[in-house]
Image (cartoon, rainbow, N blue to C red; front, side):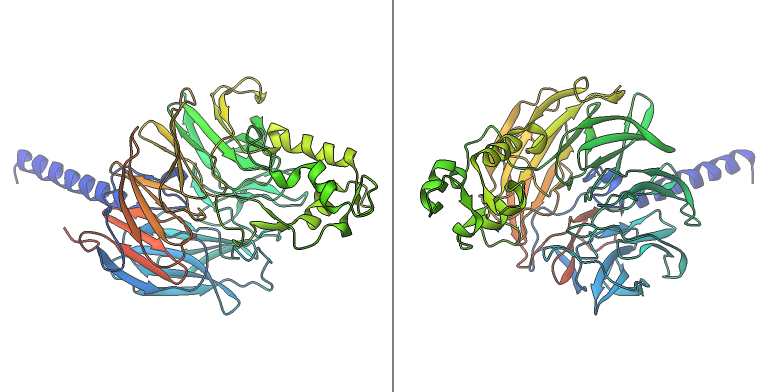
Length: 504
């Protein structure tokens, strides 16, 4: 072969390899919310219209759990709970056929809220191994054939609602945000090949939370962003103490930060929007007038019937688990400071002041880079308290920040100014929002807990292009890989696409 022919052949091989690698990259959704937990597939082209009879590639029964599907090429991975055992399951992305399942060696399974699951943490993969994390055990790594490679048990940290934070791969490490109601809470990095601890950063005051870390890349650096109870903090990729932080969020964090246009966006729900109208149930004069039977100007807990229920999130039905709270229990747990089973006007006023504190309310902020230590007063560009998500994480897509709130309320914000371009537009689906919105090819996919998808065209006008009903509950964030959309419902894993996975 002539030198020119060798050169041509070599170039062709390199080009073919590059094309194959690029193609493979577009077919991956390797962790919770995909690339860097962003919720965005830059090269995905999933269908807009889909359902039980439309663009359905396959549907397969899966055991219960709330972890989201992760995809790498021809493999899909989930975690689940079945017959009181925590398991990791692999499926063929082309057919939905189950390839293998492995049981985590748990002695006891952690308690969790009825709305959640002990299998709520989403696994992650680097194309060689899949890493499954359970709060009841720790981390187990498998190769793609299901062979266990290593295990790293962890102490189970107490949490009121169970574990939900997911592991991520960043900086060549497997990162875990192990926040809990314990002085042993920490941020830890493991070696993906061995499971050995590379570094550990204590978080003794973090408190239980359900957020997942992400990496903020800006100004030629990378910072590991961790949102927890009380603040969002930036860590070096090699651990240590936080470099800087922004305070807020007096309650457990659920959402995961996102980045775009050189800014970081983080938020969470608390005791509601302090700028909004007061809940009429919490009018002291009306309460005293209605329930103060002995007319002493105080409210004995037993004077309030257990049938009086606080409707917490008005945008969704009161019978949704966790959305109705007996007022007597609320008074005893949060307002009766000296626990004498009597609420005074002074205790009431103190609780009102607590709810109006912006650090205990719903709050979302845009953060500039360059922070040092406490940056609450220096790096926050803008903040808002209106129309925020409770469980779905925000989405940054095509130069805009998007929120999905319970009741099917859709908000779009200018990232530089905080100006609302669309303010709580109604998607028409209602219900509770659990899964986070995801985006590809100029469209944003939202879904409510009832399994109704609303596909919105990304832009500054409100444009719903499709409403798709699956008929099963959806509490897991879907995945986009190539031209396919993968959805985990209460009982099934669905694949939607205009053509079979892996076909040209």
